Image (tube, rainbow, N blue to C red; front, side, top):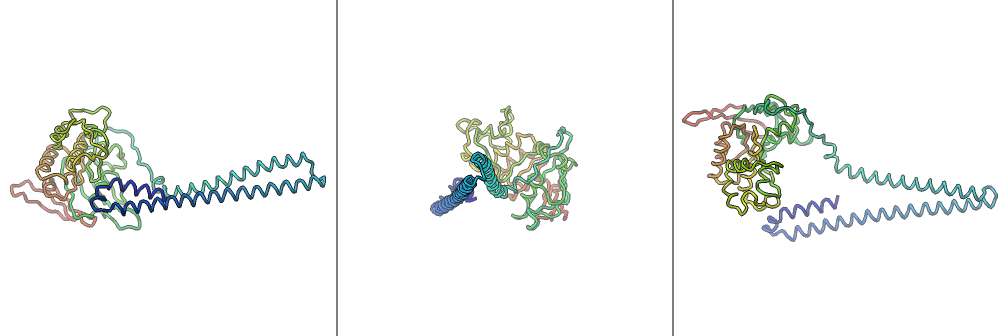
Amino acid sequence: MHTAKQQSHFLETVRGVQSIKLFGRQEERRSRWLNLVVDAVNQDLATQKLGLGFRSANGFVFGVERVAIIWLGALLVLDSAFSVGMLFAFMAYKDQFSARVAGLIDKLIELKMLNLQGERLADIVLTPPEEEAPPAPPDAIDASLKVVGLSFRYSDMEPFVLLNCSFEVPPGESVAIVGPSGGGKTTLIKLMLGLLAPTDGKIFAGGIDIQKLGIDRYRKLVGTVMQDDQLFAGSIADNISFFDPLPDQAAVEHFARLASVHEDIAAMPMAYNTLIGDMGAALSGGQKQRILLARALYKEPRLLFLDEATSALDVQKERAVNDAIRSLKLTRIIIAHRPETIASAERVIVLQGGKVTQDLRRVPAASGEAQARSN
């Protein structure tokens, strides 16, 4: 456990080295890491001492036992109760028995250690795998989405993050989910993507429960750009096609244009073959977001989920991206705070305290007014 803490701290420091330098916390992080190294070494020494003590005790006990057996056997031979041959046979059987007992004790100790490791991995190991549904053509499913009585909390001891949320999104509609930070917006979108299992309620795609539809099949219909999405080491084209073994270069460029990132890529030294480095470290925040959007569009989804997908863009770029996405025949679920992104949606759902408090639909009129329906 101490070694795991030390390694986690080290990786966290490497990933956050920029912030650490800017805030002048190098020495504190270094000192903390050294303390964790010392803790790990001390724990390793304690474990080795325990193992050494056990082996010494084991050798002492079985050594004394052997001396005692030989001494008693010699007395019995002298008293003519035992023959020398019987004594040697008894010693041979005794040695086999002792070796088996020592091995059994070693295995019992290993089993105890394995139980300790198993407790640390229980949350992962005992989590049931996602069920696979029988294959079916995705075209048979329309791009509608329906949420019915959805509730969620992370554990039985914690409060509900979402409580009895219900709404329906018809095919082709664009919906913005808004509300204060911590209101459950990202949790809601993770539930709709099947990344989390709801505590209560159901989610339907094309009128079919996504659990019965099959998560794999459902995700083939879905494109996503999440807040914490990452790029991977490789070329820009590789990342847009998500390392497709047979990439369509024309499609890569087409969707890069839709995401308003084609000009940026064309200006790079090797254009679409430019290597972006580990986790996209060589790109600006806006470029990274637009490449992630191009990656989502390359999948040609029927439902598109965007979680603050344009937060790093300036107003002009954001407007261009929103106009391009609006031209596609997609059902869009958008989480946003910026007015430009919210204004691009046909409908706004307000989420507060884990509940849907308002469902605002835009009326196609010159005044641009919206009618509100309170849930």
